[in-house]
Length: 171
Image 1 (cartoon, rainbow, N blue to C red):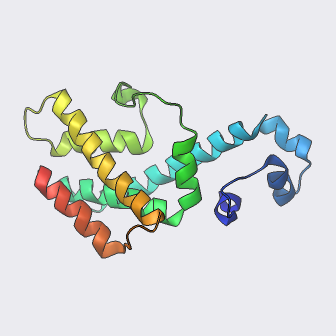
Image 2: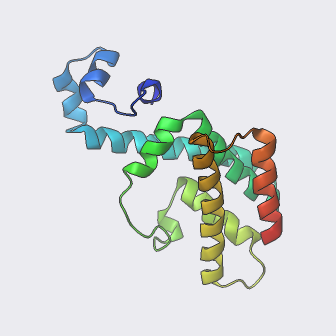
């Protein structure tokens, strides 16, 4: 992840990884048969790290404030690890992530769905919860991408204001 963040192109090669860790290129190929496997491993670690940041943020709040904190952690992760963030979504297999049963999920998507369920109005249907989760994800992902692409200037206060205001509107 550190090597990737230091790249200007966002490209990371297996030989470069081998040089950095001080092993032969063939040794790296035993763990990662190709660049795609390396990318997927980095993306997996990125999702795990994002989930850890979100869980830590959620522990400091309750209800809609915890939901907003999870979203804020998503954006802050993207700003802290921009190359990893972009990689995470460039090599994920295309599929409807909301068709996966909650019990099979971990990390950021599980947190999103759990927090939507916690802040949804009593009796909200599964379809309504899905729409709420997509709305929340689109908000934080869009905010992160706008900031990374330098379309907007963000700081912690603006992140909290944008996400907190949206969560209040939904609650």
